[in-house]
Image (cartoon, rainbow, N blue to C red; front, side, top):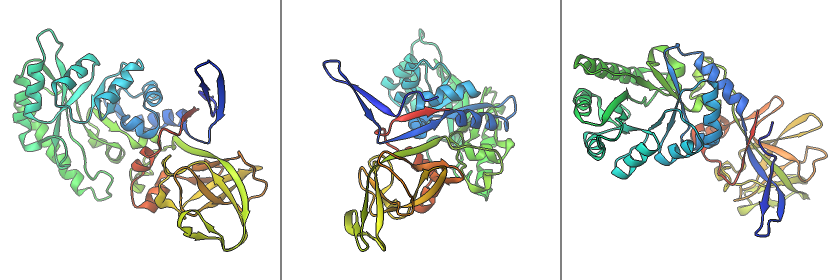
Amino acid sequence: MLSWERIVKISDDRGLEETIRERAWVEIDLSALAQNVQNIKSLLSQNTALMAVVKADAYGHGAIPVAQCVLKAGASWLGVATIPEGIELRQAGISAPILILGATTTTEQLRALVRWNLQPTLCSHQQALVFSEALTPDDPPLPVHLKLDTGMSRLGVLWEDAVDFAQWVQRLPNLEIASVYSHFATADDPDATVMEQQHRRFQTAIDRIRQAGIALPCLHVSNSAATLSSTTLHYDMVRVGLALYGLYPAPHLRSTVDLRPVMQVKARIAQLKTVPVGTGISYGHHFVTQRDTRLAVVGIGYADGVPRNLSNQMDVLVSRSGRVWRVPQAGAITMDQIMLDVTDVPHLSVGDVVTVLGQQGRERISADNWAQTLNTISWEILCGFKHRLPRVRVG
């Protein structure tokens, strides 16, 4: 079932409604998302919770429908990067616990945390002091999550200072330690040397905190890669992002669990034309036809999230009468349009749908393919699709 059709209805100031068919859109398969959650949970013990990371608008998939779906499928926590991301979920009626993974430092941010029942990450003694002093005895204790830097060298207190930090927070009024956590820098590397070092540091810090008499209700350190790598890294909770959306953090982890990509990107043919051999295509004429060529102009471009550096290096899927063709993109990708060489595909029409990213039949073009070509990561590809492309929920 589609949540809405691939059209936009626009009302003017007189109340007259106009229907516009979309030129391009992103399809989000909620059934694949739910199945991914269940398959990931099958790797976890009954005592290990699943935090679904839905920051960056759920990696471009749409934070609210994704959050609703993953919670129904078995996730119990949500992770976001910023307070506004958390507020958006609360305004949608989502009541699950939400951890702010990014930095929050000001009293204004603290008031928003309290008002919207969001839980912050603590990274420094000063941050903890500011929060404690800004709260009053009338405020409920604020659950806080202590972040340890075990080797990522990003947010967090150095792991050697973990005991001092935990004791400092415990002594402050109005704060309540909800968890202690860290983050792996190389969990997707087949060589686990650095990850194992970080794990040892984390466990040493935890042991020392407990020896100091501080109870720790929840421990978590695993991202998607670590979650798929070893059950010894799961602790009380795992924080899963990329794997929820059906992509593997590294090729060597593909055998650990079955995942289905959640996102597909589709667009319509806006024009068909035939140009002679020797014709330059698009800006700069970096592609010149080697034969009489049938071109399809498709309404999607780099302003929508198709990287310009994929020019002349990507394929698109086109289907007719049950058959699927991989056709090459031709010429420089422009802001709003791409051109395809569809010379070998018969009977195409203006308005036909092409799959820019996704699967048709046995053919698939994935974010991993684009990332490999561009020497980047699939996370960046997923997050790159702009909101000029409406998200259409299927499944």
